[in-house]
Image (tube, rainbow, N blue to C red):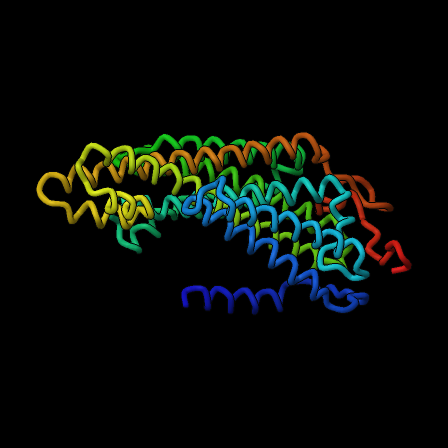
Amino acid sequence: MVNLPVVAAALILGYLLLPESRDHDIGRFDLVGGLLSVATIGVLVYTVIEAPVTGWGSRSTLLGLAVSVVLLGLLLIWEWRFPHPLIDLRLFANPRFTAAATAIAMAFFALFGFVFMITMYFQIVRGYDTLQAGLSTLPYAAVMGGLSPLAILIARRIGTKYTVAGGAFLMAAGLAASATLTADSDYWLRIVPAMCLMAAGMALSTSPSTDSIIGAIPDEKAGLGSAINDTTREVGGALGIAVVGSVMSSFYASSVRDSWAGLKIPSMLTEQAADSIPAGMAIAARLPGQGAQVALARVREAFMDGFGAGAWCAVAASLAAMLVVLLTLPPRDLPRDGEPPGTRPRACVWTPRLAPSRPGGA
């Protein structure tokens, strides 16, 4: 319900302000490509989420990963041969497009993973209610919203490559700072600075990257660019929650088992506590006497162990994005054919040939 007025305003402003663009060669809908993409991501995310329960080396996990790879291969083959694919794979031949899409996917991988963890940290570890937890993340939104428009100006001055790479580095720095948080870390001195670093990095990474994706295709294909831009965000975010959440759960479960081993708690209760953080808190609170306080403290410590491991996983994703950008993204935007240098506001140098040109006469 909160989103409805925002969506209504976006629809009205979009209708009034956005320029028109239309693709006159849309072809028929790629139903098979759509189903394969959903199946690929669905199986992969489900497998990663279940891995802490079934075991990372278990038969079901390995089978799920193998099925994901097979489905991805089928998707790529189909998209290459279908005359009007859901995603034209030739777009990824453009290093600007590919690097920008990778940067956005990795940024949202880190963001969604962090938000997943910090929400539990605020509500479960620090005891905030839902509203307090939401308000506690506002500094992130404020910094990102304020810097996003400036990121384009910075990119035009120093180049897209170094702006996006610098943003990825700032995200990694903020995540590294969050990895050192404790259950009692000061909100304003420790948590807010970490969030602000991440938000600044997110703004510097995503705004110029989005500009590069949209600018990498002709105006009549703007819908395709917008769809790919959104898809990279959602896929990166979904995998971020799955992977970062699974890493956090694995470390939490291991830490709970180790820390409760000397408390004379029945193994059945220990295993139930290891299943999830809320379960651990609930079981610890029901223990008799002083054992409850000791067990609760160790659950919080176990959560922070998992939180740190998940944060370092997100750091690795951010640094990987930085390396991809530095190695593949062209340093500066160049005009399209026929345009004098410095006149084009979009971050594009290349216009792909999107008319069908496939083997087999397609």
